[in-house]
Length: 282
Image 1: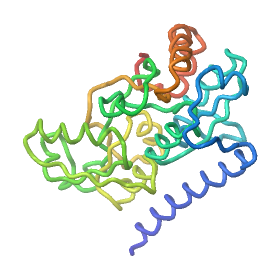
Image 2: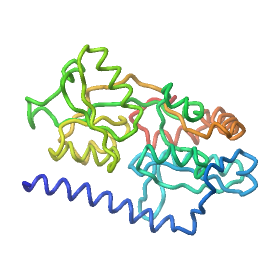
Image 3: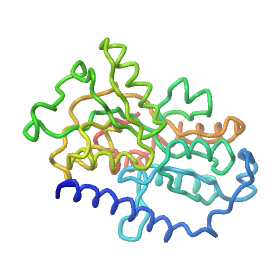
């Protein structure tokens, strides 16, 4: 293994380790009571406990620790919802897309407070709120000067290439559709041990050639990883929502009513500008 490869794996491993340590320090086991399996709750049960249990992803846009302070777009939104309804928000980071879905459907979490792409497949398994953000999927690759033979200039050049994505991501469906559009096969490598930020780091340091992730996350890392290029779109700009259990219609309605009003306020626009500056308001 060459020096660059060792360095990239050290960076990725270190980043994951830091996230795990932060999660252990900030979310001790006793603060995360286990709910019974399949104990899906609706709004009345949440109010009775006084706590809404939310799950999100630990990354530099959604939820992170900065100077011992919890921050992030989805963290700020779920905190605002909880405050407006006299609740406490118990926010848990979970890097696995599949485990977030499993936890929601098992009743461990009340809401997935994370950008979910509204696909028909996802709508079959959970209920999606009204949009909380606009975003799109982009190809992450190294800039042309790093290796011009690998640089992708258009979607047509994706034919025969292997794209790395987080396991279970709705992006997979979009890539399959894109393959149909260009009339060729685009190979997909699902990765279950890393989140999008770690995939971006692997691309930057040459361990993999291509990854696909949300533009907001890619832009958040672009300054610290100047060797990456994110100019090739994989999808159009689309609406992203939160997810709740299908057995919780009152919670879904409560979140939607709140969002309908909150997205028109200066408070929401301030949160959006702070964490999603590269995206348009929904």
